[in-house]
Image 1 (cartoon, helix red, strand yellow):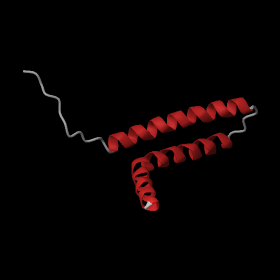
Image 2: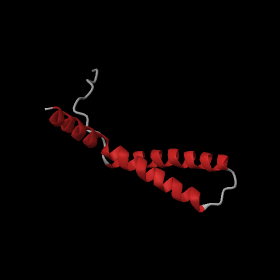
Image 3: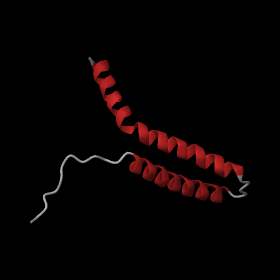
Image 4: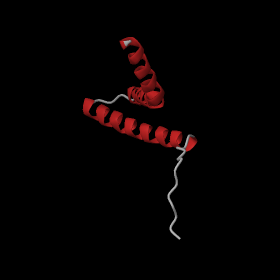
Length: 81
């Protein structure tokens, strides 16, 4: 019974977080490929550029994903007359 409940919880987590996992993994890989292509002498600059690329990548991909798959709201605000 515990395995069945754990499997159901795992299925729900995968269904809910799969898109974000793909976005984060692709951003991390892309940022590493870009930064490793440059010969950066200091490790401080490496990490600063790496973190900036991660933030920019997440913002761009999440914005694209949100525009492509907009959230459908089932409720609407009542308009005052």
